[in-house]
Amino acid sequence: MGEAIGAVLPLGVGVALSPLPIVAVVLMLGSERGRVTGPAFLAGWLLGLAVAGTVVLLVAAAAGPADDGEPATWVGWLKLVLGILVLLMAVRTWRQRPRDDAEPDLPGWMTALDSWSAGKSLGLGALLSAVNPKNLMLTVAAAAAIAQTGIGAGGQAVALAVFVLIGALGPGLPVLLAFTLGERADRMLADLKTWLARHNAAVLTVVLLVIGAKLIGDGIAGLSG
Image 1: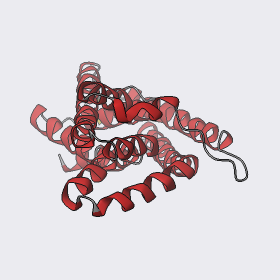
Image 2: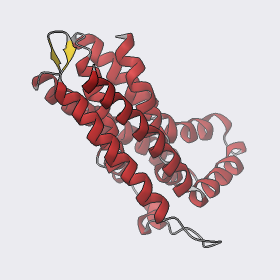
Image 3: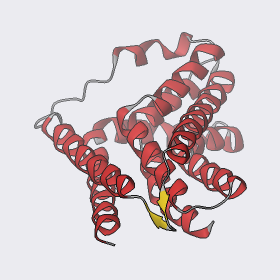
Image 4: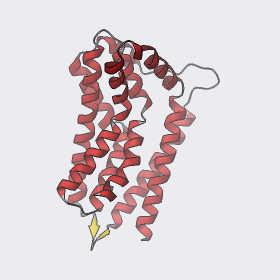
């Protein structure tokens, strides 16, 4: 089980470092209904990761992730392909960054977050965590890494839970700060929102480069082992 947890830790961090969802939850927390919509968004984020991870883990287990105690060849190829896709996403993100002193354009739906219901916020959290291409690729990689260790169902569930909890730290920390520090967190969260919105492309590019390189390295190691 330790091997599985060690494999998913960096992938969970990659999910957690998602600037736009963090900005979204900060905007929710700053609204009149923030005490409801912020936690609802976080619950949706956790739910989306858990469901996506469980589905992919079941598929990976059914596909036979190990041959005679060794990782199956398809797992290595999967990691290699995912790594290349993540690196391509990093290049695309960097090329689309705001130039010079231009203000970054945030998605239009963010302007209406202060009027959203708890149900809508929960749905958004689930959508951004499970369907977002970056997160989905990292979830697939995490599930494949867990399955290939050959541990039992209980150990797989624990490893997946670790991945989900680590992946929830990004949007989870603002919610925690808002509830523990109250008004003292307002300025801190406002500064965080501004910084992340301005440096979204740079942060995301670095995260994608590191994760992509790791997946490619793991894929090559698996295929050559």
